[in-house]
Image (cartoon, rainbow, N blue to C red; front, side, top):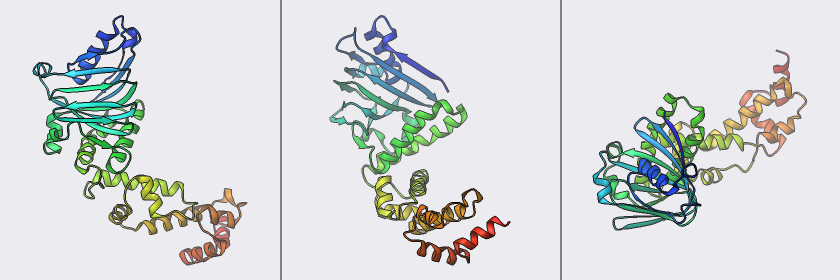
Length: 317
C-alpha cells in the first residue's frame, strides 16, 4: 500500500507543480488557476492494488482534458468523485453536472472533460481501471458527468463506507486495506445502477452494510421506547419497506430484533453483580420498557422468573 502526500505550497512554482500532481492522479490536463502565488492544493494518494484512493483539497481551478491528452495515455480509468465540501462543476460530452457537498459524480478519464470550481473544494476520489468497472457494470461510460446523491439509499451507504475507509487507512494493514478496497467496485456498481431509488435487495455487500448500520442504531437507541421501523429507516436513508426486506433476509423481523435486543440488554444488567444496586425500574427504562409492570411481565414470560428472582439466582451462583 503506497501512500503519497503532495502539496503545491512546497513547490517554488505552484502552478506547474499542481498541474503535474493532477496529471499523475487524474491524467494529463491543461490547468488554469487564478493566482499561482496564493494557490494551495494538496493531494493524498493511496495505491490499493489496482485501485487508487485520492483525497484532493484545492482552491479555484479549471482543468481541461483533451483528446490530445488522452492519446498519450496507455491505460483507461474512471474516477468516482465524492464532494465533501465546496461546489464542483463537471462537463463531459453533452452532459454537465454540478456537485454539492455529499454528492457523487463519475468522471470518465477516457473522454475529454472540463473540471472546474471557483471556491475551495474537498474531494474524495476512487480511480478504477476501465476493465474492472466494465466487468462489474454494463457500459459505465453512460454514467459520466451524472450526479448521484450520497445522502440517502445506496449513495449514503457508499459515502459512509468510503469516508470511513479513507479515515481508517492508517490503522489497516496492506492486506486488509486491499481486501476492503476490492469491495469498492461492487458498491460503485450498485450506486450507479440504483440511481436514487432503493438499492437492489440481492446485493449481499449492500444488504450486509445496511443491516449492520441498522442493528448498531437499534443497539445504541434501545432505551428509546418510541424506537420504530420508521425512525430506523430514516436514519439509514432507506424506505421502511426495504428495511423490512433486509431484516426478513436475516431471519427475523425488525420488531423481533428490537424485542430480543431489549431482553438481552435487560437480562445482562439484571444478572450483572456490578449493577446490583441499580433499581429494577431503572433497568426496565434503560431497556426501553414503558413501565416496570410491563417489564416484569415480559421477563417472566421469556425467562420463567421475575426480574428480582433472576437477580437472586445470578448472585447466588
